[in-house]
Length: 320
Image 1 (cartoon, rainbow, N blue to C red):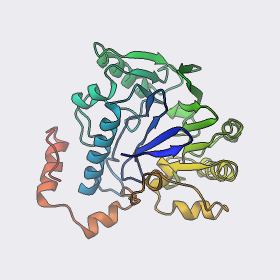
Image 2 (image 1 turned 45 degrees about the horizontal axis):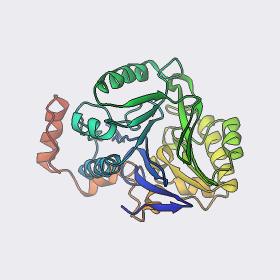
Image 3 (image 1 turned 135 degrees about the horizontal axis):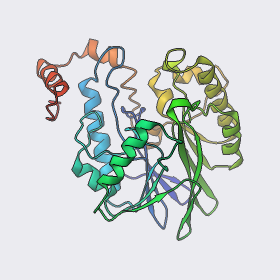
Image 4 (image 1 turned 120 degrees about the vertical axis):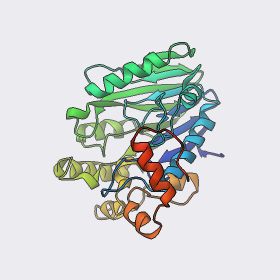
């Protein structure tokens, strides 16, 4: 894994929707330290009324492999919030391609910069955070609640930004963004801000003058269903405005919509990058393609039997 140079930072796009899974896992290497941003992977249990296609499980397996490979030599791991596509749980799940072994390999002996599990996150996230922190016991981690912190490691500065609303906030609570600085290079990593929805947050991020902004886009596929259409439109508008001012890598929710590029082009934005482009690999929007995958390459009877057993609690690897 060669990575992509950004000044004296080297970026490693590990996993996201452009690489076939729900994630924003990103590796960052400076001359001082290796930082793993949000070591999570997940597959949507249902999309278009369908379970993940075997190709999606293969993508999850490969994403986890890349994350573990980077984690092996990492010093710092962040957790922006406690959704399963943003951290590695200790239980066995092939939708997250997680296990106790993967959990320990990701976090043992690391400095963890975590979102404070307080009232700014949802009840379910607080419950997950309690389990996560309990499972870390004995692994030799240094755990810092990152809210409001600046951590300096040699000439590298890691600053926690926010907390900012997860989209329009509400029941989903808030998340942290992170800025990694080395010399005059500033990488801003802003997961799950969904655009951002907030114009005030967009302006705050622009004022940081990032060399590169990695932004989670809005969930256009949920507009008017689970997310207010006005919030999605605000996210698209703010993302478009940011892309005219700074270099942007767009990721996450927006890329669950196969027509995401046209949505930005209609707002006059033609140049944004994806993780897949940075990594030099083929873009694979597998979740958005789930209907086509099931229709054109139907899962085998063996896979269908495995899925039924999995739903009943049998945790064997899928036949992929």
